[in-house]
Image 1 (tube, rainbow, N blue to C red):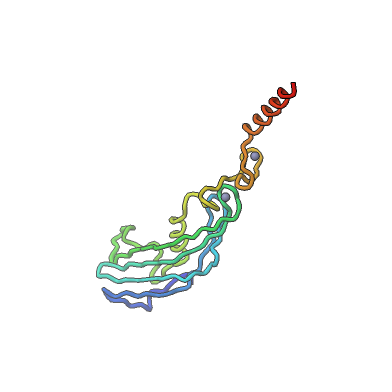
Image 2 (cartoon, rainbow, N blue to C red):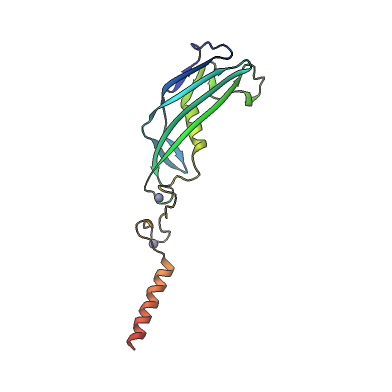
Length: 169
Ligand SMILES: [Zn+2]
Ligand SMILES: [Zn+2]
């Protein structure tokens, strides 16, 4: 489901409509990388509550995003729980704050809403694990698999060569 039509609801003030829906999710881009929701359809709960002054919309679901780790480019999986809320005043009087941006006439754009809600919930950087060491900036090797540093490493080996030379003298 990508959108929801409110026309059939006909809620009166104080009434709530709850729906278990199958929500279609789109891929995300973050820092130039693509993150795919797997699966791309998830069960979601949509609640529409009518009050005298307006209508509250709530959307809840959890998505699993697959994509490259920001540091080491290996596969990273991120679980993102979403609890989004929007409000539409019965009489918004031109105020954007009282308007649900995903509502166009009776059509609620779930795909766009879900996308924005996930984008807001994402961390700055998606990592394969919190302490990912990343790639070596000098040689590009994965520092998780081969922890090393360059300057010290070369200096160390030079010194140890010198040390062994001195031992031979
Ligand atoms: Zn990583
Ligand atoms: Zn290196």
